[in-house]
Image (cartoon, rainbow, N blue to C red; front, top):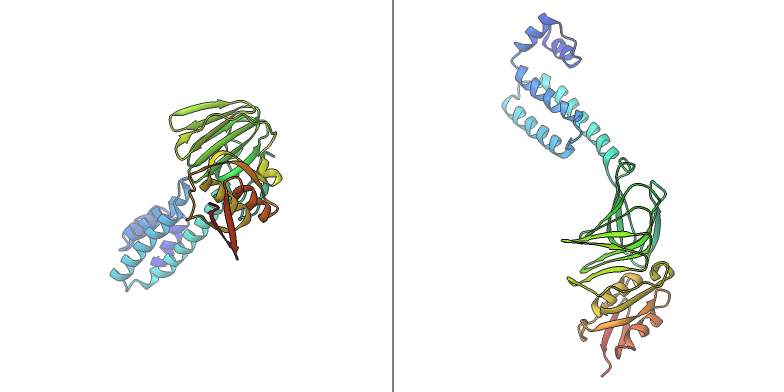
Length: 301
C-alpha cells in the first residue's frame, strides 16, 4: 500500500493490524505521532489556543528546515494548522467573557443573564461569563456600578480593591483609582477588603480613600445620586472630586495651582458644566477659566 494511503487510513483510525505494522515502519512515523498528539489537545477543557498554535508553528519550522525534501507532508501540516486555528477560534468564541463599558459623560444599563440589572456610571466597565452563569453569578467591575440583583445564588462583584457578595439586593460599588466604596440600599452586602470582612445593612456604607477607611456614613437616599445626574461628596479630597467631574463632562482640569488635597463637601450636576464648576469652586474660594476642553483652576485669594 502507498505511503499516502496508509497515512489517510491512519488519520481515519481505520488501519488493520497488518497495515498498522507497515505504518509504524514509515520513516516519518514519529513526526506523524507528534502531530496526532498535538491535535488531541482540542479535547481538553484547558486548551490554550495561542500556546498550541505557537507549539505547532515551532514544530513546522523545525521540520521544514530539517526535512525540506518531504513535500508530501506539507498538505497534511497545512490542514492541521487550519484545524488548530479553526477549532481554537470556536473554543475561544464559546468560552470568552462578555464585556460592557461606558465612555466619558455616558451611563448605561445592562441586563444580566438572570435578569439582574447593573447601571454603569461614566468610564466604567463590567465583564462576566454567560456560559457558567447559572453556577457562578459573578461580574468583574472597573469604575462604578449600581446593581439590582435578582433573587438566587450568591452574586459576587470582583474589583481590584475588594470583593462584594450578596444574595438579592440593591447596592452600588465604586472602584476608582484610590477609592473603594460600597453603599447598601436594600438587603445585605458582604464586603471583603484585604483582611477585613464587613456586613452592610440598608443605609450603611463602606469607604476606603487613599488607603484609609472613612467613618461610616448613613445613606438617606434609595439609590445613588449619579443615577439622577448628580455627584455628591462628603469630606472627599478635591482631586477625587475633580476626577469625577472630568469623567462626567469629558474635559480635562488643570489644578496645578491649587491644593487638591483639601476636602470638599457638596455636589455638582451632570447637566450644566458652568453650574457644576460654580458648585465646586465657590465653597473653596477658587476661580476657573475655560480654554476649549481644558478647565484651569486657581485660588481666589
